Length: 306
Image (cartoon, rainbow, N blue to C red):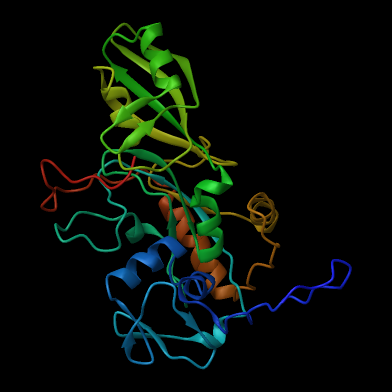
């Protein structure tokens, strides 16, 4: 049917879908980041009302959600808890909660939570040291890791082998790796080292598997040391020694929240005993890190991230 050109048009919009996407709910509850929640859904680890969940499924407040058979309390949904800690990862730890080979994990040294769990923002492989960020807020984790937010990662890298100007240009212009094109957005030579062992500071925009190492190896050199020193606006300082963590204060969390486009929320009021316990843990971790045993450590451990 033709309508008069001056006649107002009436659009018939579809009603908004009910509920909220399952992975977003789990992120806000601090169960996991959206990315991890999506992977768990694909693996069939999450159920809604007793049935295996589907990717993209929407849930209501009354729906019963479980992860690995453990129920998730939805009544906590509106109470966002946004705690953030920085951890200076030593070599030899893996970024998984449990390791089948019995290797130490980064979660072993973190403070325990009365509810929720620590969510890892960007992983590092077993041989890479430096800055790791953990939060109880899955949405903050998702914002920091999502490529659209342009959170770059800076690494200090010790390279063994001759590095030419041509190599630097190749790495900045981009090379093709087995999983697609990749490049450093910036490379700066550091004063440390000389000859065939030189230090560089380099920046990547992604968190692809072993990306930093593979980029340098594409030029025929070897990475002998790798340390993450910055993730977005968060820097690793010399005040945080290896194997130690530090919790961000309210002002620091608010600045990070604004950087990620989130509304700041008040940190939880911890009970005096809980606060004292955290302070004791921080003091204990300020001591030199004891050497780890082999603990069935693999000679060629599989890596997770750069």
